[in-house]
Length: 145
Length: 145
Length: 145
Image (cartoon, rainbow over all chains, first blue to last red; front, side, top):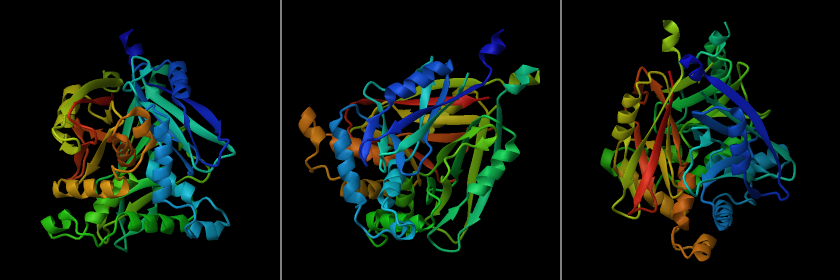
């Protein structure tokens, strides 16, 4: 029946990342594509949503050198040495990690067309870890038909 | 019938905020959760979308001191005293409010799983008002099944 | 039958932009509205997603002078003359374009209600081109009922 093709479906899975460094940007494109394929959803939206506030997901060019340029830009905008209230309040040292995650945008929504991520030629999905060296969970949730 | 469970549904409601201060960041997590619950949608996406361009919604840590750190960072990046064309053109003083809203990202999309916001332990939804002291409208729209 | 109204639908079309200048911000609100109308979808989400990493879509006020203010702010935050690794690696000169696109946020998700974009009075959709003078493709994908 044609109605069956147009029923709404949802699917959910996780990507787990443990960054070696405190600050590290990791290409997760293949992992997101794999989950999209497993979902069997043909047309819809893919939400890539870290379950943390000291990391973020964003889209950029495939050239790895741009990753270094972006980290340097963030260090200029959000110095790690500044006296942040969060660091005083929690006896933590990760205020800059939270602020960098906000500026980077935290989560993304991707188009899914004909069962595949509908991205431009050079578009790459990056997970930006700003407080690493421990396991982090990234939710990938898909809705569509 | 099993088809009934997989029909698509949509739901829409508003959160109204009147900030006491010109610039103020307000935790709206409970309000968004309430609307998600009222929708009776189990699996889907929640769009939190201010109907204004001088405010923004973002996700961050639950520690309130981080709110002050973020406002200070924005004040360094977007000084309120600079000679903005918008302030000259409209005889307004809120150019910095619009620019801060762009950098913060304006709106967010949240995962909804098993009828609840699917957030990490410390994830909190903030409404950042950059031109307050008047009522603002935040649209919360949910689609799913 | 009432079920027919609640079937899920998806729709996809493109907006093509060729900016005259290297850096240019273009109002694409009418183009997105047109595609939303063509979709015949009444309730849903509209994803506006450039198929490039040197441009971005964002929401701001309708005042055009604010566009200039935003470009000036980005030039202060992301100088075009700095020694970026990407420029050395690729013999390109567009590292700043990629970085500005990340900060601006790349893509947006809009609410669609009763067959129309559900925006506030002054909300305008802008395409920010940071590496122009060639044709770029913006995907507009809609899911809903």
